[in-house]
Image 1 (cartoon, one colour):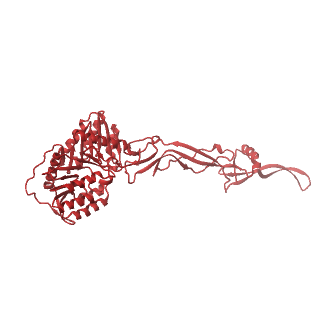
Image 2 (tube, rainbow, N blue to C red; image 1 turned 90 degrees about the vertical axis):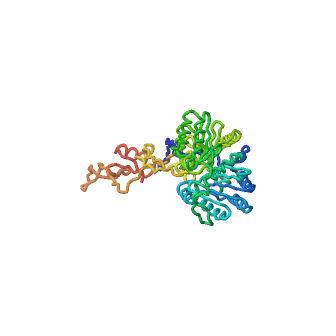
Length: 505
């Protein structure tokens, strides 16, 4: 008889997105692995992994290995083969105490890595001389430093990172390899805390047999006890930039001098691009840098650490944070002009291909698709920005069955955004005619009627009889009941006369 009407209202969401990583393209591995003669990036061809294993296989006297984590089977087998042919193999790695702490604190760290690390150490027991300490974080390889020095500084741990992370490896000159061996030796004898004495057994390290020679910081620089040449080199390089800075770092401390120096360079007009991984741990720092004017991009697997400033470059194992530049054992190498050019190309290529861009307060209209909450990271923070979301609102009862268009708008409550963000909300509802309440009381009207009395004479009397259409009363209102379409005109007229509203049964 009188059908409900459907109404809607579209409301644009003015509130910007919270700090997020915005996906701009798919996540892909590096396809160009060899960059120049001395720079290798990790990729599906495993060029860096094979080069490291080949260096160990080529060693005839000594192999020096340092890695925060160590679980790569190919490198482990190469070390065991080297030991079996009489090569002395020395290893530095992080202590189990430190690894357990990282599992609790680092959102990008998985407990399985530690278990794989322990299993590989058991395999190496009896073949290598391995020492550990809580602050060891460097990743390096040097072979035959006294006769045919060759070496590598890597940003990757010697585990699955050599197969699947975004990493860098630098092949060193003989002189640089010799210097790197000196840093290894210094730390091995003066800073190691425990020594692998058998499967699952670590013994306390005793005093060295003699006083080792303290290395000279030249192109190879380090963080060690009483040594800040790596920190100084990183800060000097950042502060020297006048045109462009390209920086890669897995970790970023918002209040560290290196991040503050990047912020200062941005404000001085230098074009600064920072490459990192989308993790909650870097959120505060990247917000600070973006607020200053830097561009911050990220990759799901980035772990590389490098700085390129106006053609000068440094590759290092330290993140831009206190544990790395201020304390711990870390190494880095200043690159020559040719290697710096190759590294600049590699980081610029990442800049073009990295899938995530940090945005502190992006307007919703500026992006559709995947984002990641900066406060949560990739594990739990992935969300989608959608163009429109439909919300069904409870029906609205019109004031009268004859005036559905006069119904007021319902309360439009924004939906709670969980897995998705919306550019606009479409609220939809029905306006329905009012119905006769169950407890309504029928009203009768007084009319004069002619009746014949007992004496046979006609006379006018006052009587009460139903309205037509019927009229009811409820909560102080008069209601005209429209029970059939043919009563529509009568109901309208009666409602006007009685100041009533028309309702349906």
